[in-house]
Length: 230
Image (cartoon, rainbow, N blue to C red):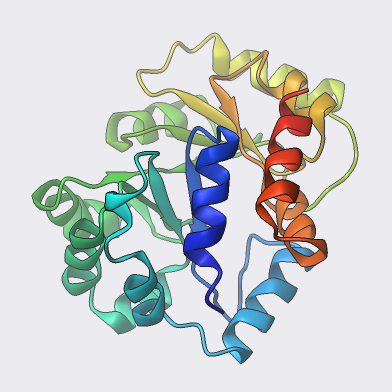
């Protein structure tokens, strides 16, 4: 329950370039078994958005790496959109990922407030996203674009397929204005190295959560990050 700051400090010491913090939700649509289970445990332990903000308050006194919150639109709307974004800015959060936020609602309600509070918004694209849609997303996104590597949920341990490589190359050739990060299925140094041949970075989620469940000591976290980089 209270390990958030300790884990953040350990990740920074290990050389992580940025951190995405998941806001636990009872119905995490894009996430696989590992993250679903971690959300269930976190919620049963009493984790809430307010508790997370309390844990992050003052983090900029000891952390300088970018911190992004990832979650789903329902809890944010229940919390209050502007209240949520103002708290993000207050504690030093840099950006936000809400996979189920429609572009139309983003344009109408979120974009002006994100600008007001100087927060980046990261959109997701998938292998099925058309070029026209990708360019539309690129025109609105800031920070980076999250390239979902496949149509599956998070947590895959299969290697990257030829079809995925073709998708990465297709997007790479579009020369988007935003940097690209590849996520979903990046679980070891091999998949990390391969993904970063096609993008500016790769995102590791489920594999890291499994590591925390086994051992969340600073030494274990530093070993995980260095092992991922190869």
